[in-house]
Amino acid sequence: ETYVVWFRNDFRFHDNPAVHAALNEAQESDGNILFVFHLHPDFTGNTDLSNDYFFQTVRDFAEECEKINVKLHIISGTPKEAFDLLTERVGVINTVYHARDFTPFALQRDEEVRHTLQKHRIRLESVRGNYIHEPFEITKNNEEPYKVYTPYSRQWLRAEKTSLVQSDPDDISRFYGRIKAVDAESEKTFSTILNNCSSNWKKIGEKAALHRLEFFIKNVLSRYHHTRDLPEKAGTSRLSPYLRTGTLSVRQVYNAAAVQLEGKNNEGPETFIKELAWRDFYTMILTHFPETAEKEFQEKYRDLSWNNNQDHFSLWKQGMTGFPIVDAGMRQLNQIGWMHNRLRMITASFLTKDFQMDWRLGEKYFGEKLIDYDPASNIGGWQWAGSVGTDAVPYFRVFSPVRQSERFDPDGSYIRRYVPELKDVPDKFIHEPHKMPADIQDKASCRIGKDYPEPIVDHKQERKRAIAMFKEEGELL
Ligand code: FAD
Image (cartoon, rainbow, N blue to C red; front, top):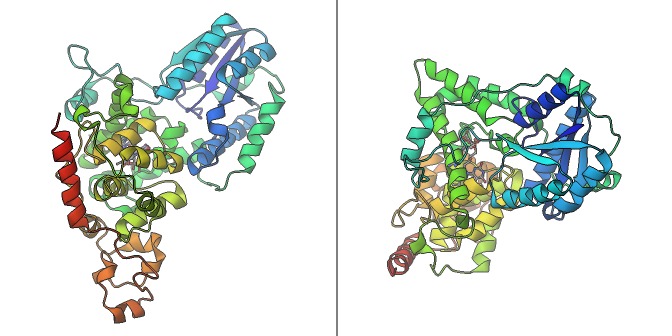
């Protein structure tokens, strides 16, 4: 009998509960295990940064599997087609194991697979996945979900954490079912997708992830509370792409940080651990309130009349708004598929407040680009910045892009890195280059309106407009 591990966002060997469960069963019943990855049709058509990174992670994992003489089989088509084929080709499957995933997309897909497998009398078994605490673990005393982060996080911090599991690679290899290819066609489709990827990441996969974790704990964590808001300082963990693909176990990250709490200087690890709790919080919110995938968490803001200025949207996407800090953030996103948290807040605030454009547009754009794209955190972050979410910034507190820039990138080195046309602009004007006198523009080889745009809107005016929109329309209800 075969015990299948269906990998979705847990491409790792360390602390992998699905692998652990399948291997245990195979050992006890003298069966074997098999690894599969399902190429879902929703993700095969487009080659954006986010998908490219994901598929290259899968390839890296397949290569790591080969090193221990194990094959990651690829299946494709609708969930029904893919899993019907799997059962047809593999023979007697007892159970398919997978890590739990709570996005609306994943829940629906898993139901389809469950239904398909049931017809073949095969069990679909979900196990603990990529969360420290899953959505139903941390609730109020009356079992209602929390709606606010702070009380949630207090309970989250107190709650007992589960221990890690380990599976021996030799055992995996020994119990692995030797089937050459489940579906050669799907393998070909996967190769084509990989060949069409436009970017190429070197630091990808489980080894890179563990390495990054070690580096962060050793060199950054103790000062994390000071450095996390300065985009040029590389003062955050940058673990998010590994957490999204599950090449790194978030429980392992938690443990590595929690050990440091025993030292004298706790503020770094404490602040970091609270960030990990945000990740679980937003997953909990999306699970209990799935309508917030599309709609504002705060009902009174569900009918705001957002602008639909496509020219503005396009300038924002390209990083050509004339606000250097906003443009630097967007260009970082477009170039490397990752953006510093401070910049995500600034650029999201800019789109929703200075342009009064619908947060859903920005959420979607981030979704195509972010290599750490996580629907729950992205929706949560966008609704937060747009003042329509759970712990949202109050609508009357509008980020000033210039003030943010002065505070978090005081010497403009982050701006200069991503907006090279501002490279030689003196510090004095780096946050507002349009204020440069003509002779200084010449010296800096940066003519405003030619080499770099004028600010596309007047922030003061737009701030008033945004506040009025929220006040008038939000208070109608
Ligand atoms: P660190 O500061 O080192 O934090 C460690 C980990 O904690 C992160 O990897 C992440 O898993 C978690 N974390 C930190 N901050 C948050 C947060 N505010 N919400 C949820 N989890 C958090 N994060 C994503 O993982 N995917 C997204 O698609 C995403 N979209 C966002 C969109 C907006 C508009 C905003 C404001 C935030 C978004 N975030 C998202 C949260 C945050 O920006 C990233 O998690 C963080 O920048 C990742 O970098 P890091 O790993 O260096 O973070």
